[in-house]
Length: 476
Image (cartoon, rainbow, N blue to C red):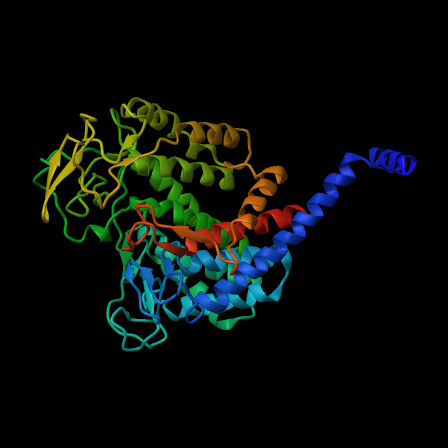
């Protein structure tokens, strides 16, 4: 027996570690493929409604939340709603070629196409009940009401990007998806101003406006210059331009239509124009047609924004990488220097910095009344008044783009393997990824008691995408 064990030990020592690693990776890949199918099977077969999704679900699936409580006939467009889930399903299909994922993604795309407005875009919700309270003026004639296509929070951009990718995955053979995608893209191009910017909302082609660089208002912005329909004007709030850039990049890659690349360049030109002059070379959330920062909602004052400035820098780097034009990198050093000099004592950035003085600007709230303040000791909880600094990450991305590389490096197979193991291990007995509400701010601000377990479309999509990336990395 000792001789036999000794011989077996010699055999084991003779096996190259690379073969052992390969065997372990094969086993993990098989587990990942199985976990993807089980988790997606549960989500698609039990959670979907009309092929679409909302943000959050109670574990018994009796409660659904988008922006507030959702009915069984309502699905959400704004991330992380139906397009977010649908794009994760498309990634799973690309990694496995399992038709289950393509069928589920196609059903989701059909639900999104149903909610396309006559103006060509989307609002945050689609109500598939022809008599539902959130129905709108749908292109298919099955709704009525408002016709406001919105770029706020990535609504129209996410819907269109998903449809473009679903069109590609279906080989351009699904007429409903293809026509919806092209109609939406045409409407988006018609909503781009001559200077390359976009409004927050449109109902038709935008009007021509003079092209001007950003400048500080000469009037008292605290009391003057409030514009009710600010959403018709140039908007950067909540990463509007970043979402548009990603859509245009994918549209050009899929359809090879140079209109989308031209629109991307013009968007980059607008962002260069929209950089504020010294002493605050960052970006505001909202501009009027004279390219001056303006009020949006009553708690969103004119100011140079730490959050939007970081988002614009990321967008400029993506545009520079795709177009190969370094002029889109030129605004970045001055903006990064301004951000570094504007850091708060805790290392974060304020959402707003007062025009020209650069003092962090906040709001006090009494009921529905908001008052400007420099005091951050009692901030309204419904809004993000401060944001984490991304300067270290932005610096690395800037160096990569200057070297001709994409801003974000691909995750290494080793890192993907670690994440895949954790994600697989987090599945419960019903093959769900269950989250617990601990008081964190949720998208849509769903109301649930502390400690409540729930299902999250964001977590499902994120985990499915990571597993798909891992499986794909092992198939090369």
